[in-house]
Image (cartoon, one colour):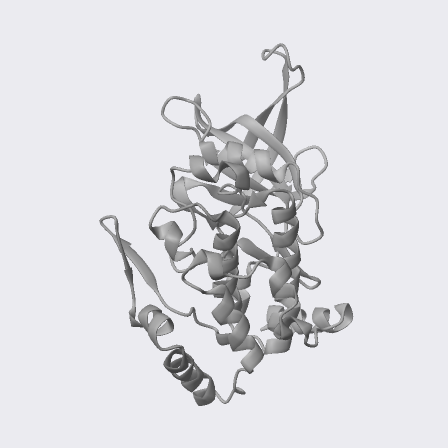
Length: 319
């Protein structure tokens, strides 16, 4: 299957354009609002790429998610953020004789090893490995925050993995911090989003990212989320572990550590518990900033060297 992307070559004349053809191979990720990511290749060079497709709206216009990602990702350059190559407002796929489906498309770096959710679901990380990976994620989010941007959809599924570590992806929910009071659409994913986001309160965007980072780190080390969140008919529901976290944090850890002990894994360090409790504060004003996090004892612990990390990561890929 072929994708034909319209590349405008004049900023003043929209009729002046060229077609950039891409070959589409297989779907590698299906997301919200029928947004899909496919493995593909550049027709002229055969370079393997990832292609994110945004269906056009009924009125033929681009989805707001596309413009969000284009605005945010086009200005980013960081070793732990996925590289973006091209953004096309108009692209088509032929689906039948004289039948075409319209999309907007983003061409990105292809990472073949999957995401952090798939890796962590094989087995929980040791604290040392979780710390090594988390520091890479934290460096990417810190860079975003320094650019005046909040990611707003941090989760294991939005972190790609490779032998050298991670690449943060998916910036279609990303927003400038200065526009927090103008956000009207939902942000974040169930189970990862800050509780205030579930209520439609976006006053503290950076603190919302911190909360999601806490869920990510917890899930890396324990192999399960701290609690479950569901939504039905516009109402949000949390399981009992959410309330236990708020009302009796010692009991919260006792329950989760029982699972670890049953699996023969070592107890969690006090420093790990402290950093998780800080990030998962219900009140966004009481959560640490990234600078605060970097000073916490848990993040001062040992990490793997690049060579050691490569060996560790490849052991996951081989299983």
